[in-house]
Image 1 (cartoon, rainbow, N blue to C red):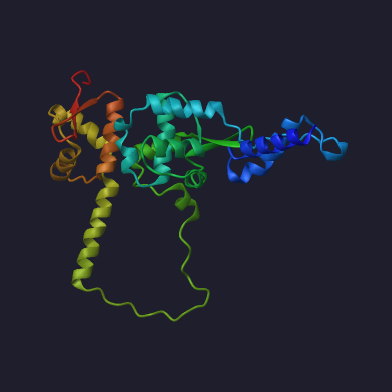
Image 2: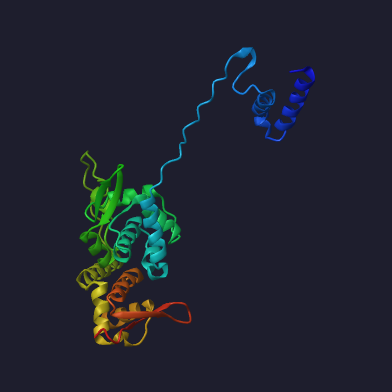
Length: 295
């Protein structure tokens, strides 16, 4: 090849190299020059240029089945019908509720911690990480069953004890992790002299007596679900009532005190059993009413 052709080849290779980002220009120049000079797989001196081996892709494989299960949950479960998930503060409670919904609504018996965290974050707008879900469920072995599926993936299935835990009112019971681990003992190994007991004042004793009476009353009163069932049978819910109105009625008329969360779980169970129905009022709050065909 003549000097004029070589000069033109260099100019054309330089022009092509300017079209790519700065950090890639040298490689682009060499490649373009090789193509223009017709060397193909050769370098100067007649030595053959070894072709580069393509690098293996390191894209992590995705589980089509897992994605489909999460997608089915997103499409078939109504978020507005599950207020107890967003009202609960415990990760264990939320995770168990997701497992129960998956089993009842879309017939999926078991989800992984990753799937549960995705559903809580994307569906219910409750930001949750996989590690927190796994830690909470691993500490509640009496409420969930751990199944290892290939390749070494753990799925959690809700058990009867978990169903009973949610029905009773998840907030009242200690989480599985706390129940197993417990609080560290504060007893000192060294024996110390006993301090004389301080006499209780009348005001402090009165407060303790009131607290004791409240605890005894709470222990003896029926569950929130049973009290709500009684209201349905007594006809109290023949007229629509909000959760706050139901709470106030039970407190004043029956002397039973329940949190809004416990009543919400009980009303949701009656709603699923088709014993009550609900509609939103003008303020956007749900009002619950006995179904005409439930008696």
